[in-house]
Length: 310
Length: 330
Image (cartoon, rainbow over the protein chains, first blue to last red):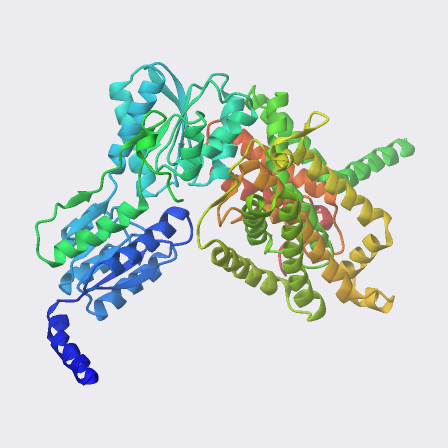
C-alpha cells in the first residue's frame, strides 16, 4: 500500500519536472588556478549554478592558451548549449570563434575582460567590472590622500592585458583632469606579481628621493610595493592606493598602512555573468555593458565590507 | 732586441690568457663602470645593496645548478621547484610554525630533488627531458596543493622568519649573506674536497671516472640534492621577503639561472666551471636589469639585452678557445 502511494507520488511529480525548462550554459575561462581571483570565481560560478533550478553548466578552462580556448568554444557549439560565457585569454584572437558561435545561433556573453571591438557585433552582452571607472576611482582616492599635491609612481598590471590597460588609462586621465598637482613620475609593469612589484618598488625608492604615493593595478602588487617601502623605512610618508581589494590589502588597511582600493568581488563577477547569460536566454532586455558594482574601499569605510576570501 | 720582442709577445700571450680565464670578471668591471656613468644613482651604496639583494634568490639557485652542470647535466626544474618550496614554507608557516615549516619544506624539496637525481643518475635518463618534465609536473603539484589560491603569512611583523628575507647580519642584508655564504661554501667543496674533484671528473670524462672507481650514479644523484637544497634556501629568502606566494612565483627562473651559469663560463658539456664565476654572471644580469630600470626602461627590455649579452659571452668564449673570431664549416 505504502509502495503504491510512493509510486503514485513519483508519477505525479514527473511532468512538473519535465515542464521546468532546463538550460545548459557553457563557460570557458581564462586560466583558473593561476591566481586566487579566478579560482574563487570558478567556485562561485559552480555554487551559484547549483543554487539555481534548471541550470546545467559545462565548465571549461583554457589554461591561458588561446588556441585551447578556441577549441573549447567550438566544442560548446557542437554540444549546442543555450549560451556560451567566455573569459577571453586574448581579446583579439577569440573573435573568429565568437563569430562562429553567433552564426550557430548561440548567444555569447563575455565575462570579466572585454574582447576586441570588432567582436562586439557577435556578442549579446559583456558582464564584468568597469576597469576604466576603477582606474578613475583610484585616481580620485589618490588625489584625496595627497590633498591634490605630490609625486607618485605607478605599478601597472601585465602588459597587453585589457584590465591592466583600462585601469592605467582610467587612472591617468582622471588624475590629469581632477588633480593636476599630482604628477606620475614613472610607470613600470608588475605583471600582477607581488615579488616583481616589490623589486620594481625597490628600484623606484633608489631612483626617487621623494615618493608621495603609489598606485598599483591590484592589491597583490600594492602589498609588494608596501613591503619594499617598509624595508627601506619609507612607508610612513607614502599613500598606497590599489585595485581589486585582496585579503592582504584589506589587512594592511586595517593596520593603517594602506590607504585605499577598489572592492571587486569574484563572487559578484561570477553571479553577474550567469545572471546575464540567463537573462539573454530568456530574451530579456540586457544592457550591452552589464557592469557589476565595484565601490571604493578605504580605511574609513572598510567596516562595511567583508574581508575578501582571496 | 730579440729579447724585447719575445717579452712583448709574452705579454700578448699573458693578456690573451687573462682574457680567456678572467673574461667574466673583466666584463663585470666594464658593466659596472659603464652603468656608473649612465646614472648617478647607480653607484650609491643603497642601490648596490638593492642589486645584490635582488640577485640573491636567482644567485642562490644558480650556485646549486652550477654543481649539476659541472657534473654533466642540466636542471630546468628549479623554477617550478622554487614555486613549490616557497608555497609550502609560506603556507605551513602559520599552520605549524616557522621552524617546522622550514624543516618540512627542505625535506619535501630535497625529496623531489632525490627523485630527479634518481631518474638521471641511476636510470641514466636524459637530464634535459627529465627536468623539463619535472618543471611541469611540479607546477601541477603546486596547483593541486593550493587549489590555485595565493598563500600568505598573516602576522608579518611578529615572526622571526622575517630575518631571512628582510633582516640584516652585521649590517648586511641576510639574503646576500645566504647567497654569498652558500657560494663560498660550494666553491670550497668543489675545489678542496675529494667530493668536488669527483664531480668535475664525472662531468668531464664519465668513462675515465668510472674506471677510476667513482660511483657515477651516486655523484649525479647528489648534485641534484645540492641543487634542491639551494632552491630550498632561495625559497626561504623569497617567502620571507614577500611574506606570501603565488603559485607561479618561480616561473621562468630556470632560464635566468641558466643564463647566469652560462655567463659565468661553466661549460654546458660538464667538467669545468666555477661557482664564484656564476656569482659574477648572476650579478651582471642583475646589474643590467637594475640599470635599465634606473634609466627608465620597462624591465622586460632586460630579456632582450640579456639574450644579447649571453650570445656575446658564448661567442667570445668559443672564439678565445679557437683563437679567432669567425669560423666556417668546410
